[in-house]
Length: 117
Image 1 (cartoon, rainbow, N blue to C red):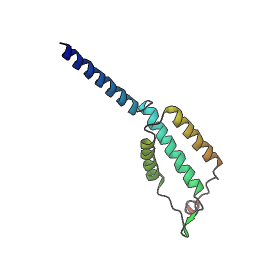
Image 2: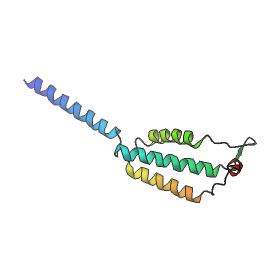
Image 3: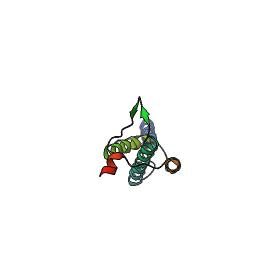
């Protein structure tokens, strides 16, 4: 009986430690808030890049961006992966930093092709 009790206790301990490890690796906020924050960060990042690189040239060629929908989808999935282990507080700090960076970025000038429409 003594060996059986030891085995049960060790199994319960292993199960508890496994559950604790699983809990620590999962999201630290509700899924709806997590995905909403990832989308907001993707939109901020896309707008920052478009503003900061609007007039830039690489190798003598102007920087061209993919359509906004494709860019946002890629960035959204990127931020979903990057933010997985971050806490709510860390994401709030990073979002505030991105908002400040967007506020200090130069305004986006309309492209010549948009002026023709």
